[in-house]
Image (cartoon, rainbow, N blue to C red; front, side, top):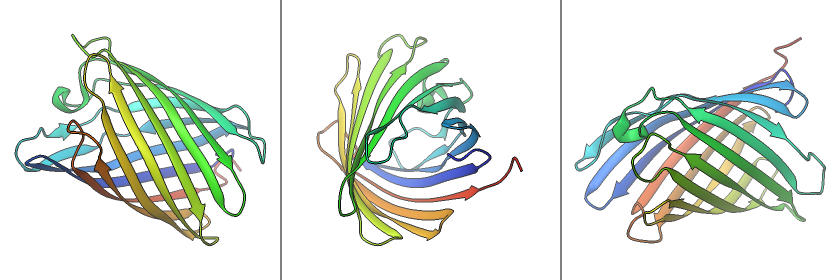
Length: 214
């Protein structure tokens, strides 16, 4: 994130799980570049509402964090480190109990002819829970740039909670850059095992405001 730039990322998802249907949004993350390769961020509470029972409703936690871009070298693997904590502001049925720290390692690698791969490893900690106090998440993305403004992608998402069965998804979609500072995206995901949602359909919009520190 450039120094003095503020980016807002938003999304809305429709999820089907067995007989239940739910919608969640706006899944907003604010990111502010405060120094070269360093940014602060905050995930705002999003609301999950049940369209068809069973399912829980309520807000998620607010989660501040900080991100350091470790290796911004063109043509090489770009590695970052993000650390934050979800504060206990939301509904326990949605967000869980107590403060929940997390550590993320996002990475990306631009290949040739518009191809790129990326992913992220995340460790979530839930010390206030009686069970399932730890969860690992891994993602892997293959992206193809079709034009200067349009890209498509396919992504694997796996959540591996301590002492419980994992959830695994294949998520595919496309991105369109309306302007250099605005982007929309659409995606659809399907579960790979019985513990996963049947499907997730979502849309997102993000924008960036530059030059705030001038």
